[in-house]
Amino acid sequence: MRDGYCDAITTIGVQTIREGLMAIKTKTGSLKDDKNLEDLESHIKQIEKAMKAGNGYDPMILNQIQNFIHKVESLPDEVDHDGLIKEEKAFLVNATRQFEEYMTEAKKSELSSATVKGFSSWICLTFQ
Image (cartoon, rainbow, N blue to C red; front, top):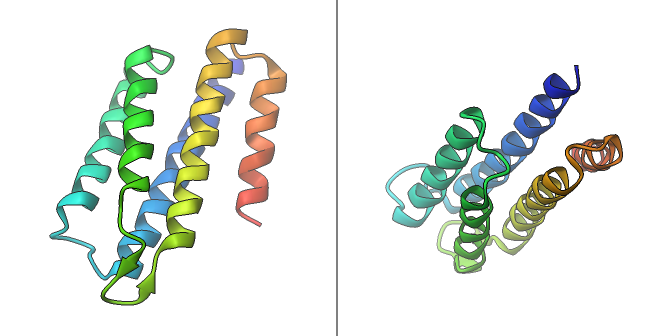
């Protein structure tokens, strides 16, 4: 039961990150043909693939998450299409850091219920 719950929390975390990236893509008007955004999407897919393979707590995955955060932070705040994406970037970085924190804590505590509840509470607040 706990493994299924943790899988669900992981899926929600990845989905939140995807939604944050989609918000940036929508605001920039670059749903395709933007190398930086394609790289970010590729990072998400790699992280998700590794998680599904059962390597979710592997240091390599945590490094990928940190690289993803760095790439998001390096995106320009100004975009041609619709002004600024500063808020969207902040949301995406925050969601990814929360996910990273959950993964780190889960590894340390072998998925203690407090860690899982903390992350799921954050997810619920994010969608309000």
